[in-house]
Amino acid sequence: MTIYGVAILAACFLAGKVTGTLLGSLLGIDGDVGGVGFAMLLLILVNGYLSRRGMMDEPTAGGIRFWSAMYIPIIVAMASVQNATAALSGGWLALAAGLLATLAALLLVPLLSRIGRPTGGQPSET
Amino acid sequence: MNLALELLVKNGLVFAFLLVGIILAGSFWFARRVLGGIIPGVALAIIVGLVLAFIGGERGIATYPLFSGMAILGGSMLRDFAVVATAVGADPEQMKHAGPAGAVALLLGVVLAFIIGVTISLALGYDDPVSLTTIGAGACTYIVGPVTGTALGASSEVIAISIATGVVKTIATTVLTPLLARRMELDNPHSAVVFGGLLGTTSGVAAGLAATDPKLVPYGALTATFYTGIGCLLCPSVLYFLVLTFS
Image (cartoon, rainbow over all chains, first blue to last red; front, side, top):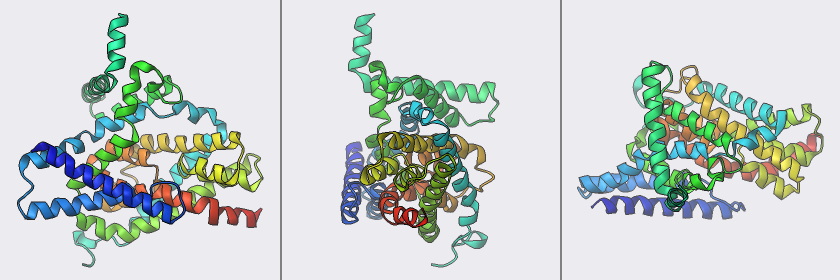
């Protein structure tokens, strides 16, 4: 059933958030450190396990795929509720710092991507 | 008329589904027929979203009750839920070999943004360590800024600037990523992991990758999700002491 897929996704999501929040409080931060990342890794594991056992039938997988496909519409809605006026109210300092921080990070992407990249289309080590 | 308005406000989330559907349909049509495919439809739709955000106030277009449903659909709960769901399309092997690069990118991303934020606020006349650190933290993400500022006791004016800096970074990442994607060789999972770690703004990374190539989203999201936490950890502690030492 479709709801099984949604429920599996919800379980992974919540387990990831709990892990992230626990990690946060361990580090002394009132917040979530990597919750989404833990949830994603867990979902990959659970999905792989259930698929191998043939327990991930088409409707169940569809429940997860639906939310994956809703991602772009959600991002469009998210863009429309950004505090965009704040971006201007911070003045030149905010504009310059925000823009330069972005550009500098973008410039480093190709450089850092060289670390551990598989050569010739094959994973470098296993 | 009033009755119709009331109905739309009451069913805000459903109205948001309709609205976003119309925005996406219109953007795809415009991108293909009018712009001839120079800009991807998704990128255009996200830009339309940002324009709407400028029309509104603190909560973007959701400042108006009629559009309050957009805040539910575009809020962090459903965003994170959908981002996690994209992981089913990801290849675990790709994530594994990009791990070390992603970790380096995370640390470097936080430190780099911080240094740039501090340098620019120095150049524009700030000289007390608390303000410098807070604005530097804001250059990480718009959450790291106020968290750091509150911890160090920065003035509300400086905290507002730090939030603004983070928001500028989110918007700049959203708009610049699809434009510069080819130059930064952002076309494979490996560099998407690095990209997520370096930029770190969850919203910006998510929107920028969606506009570039939706297949890369889970890889970028995987590292970006750690960034704000690491920033909140480093800025008010190690990085603040560094600023204290140098000033």
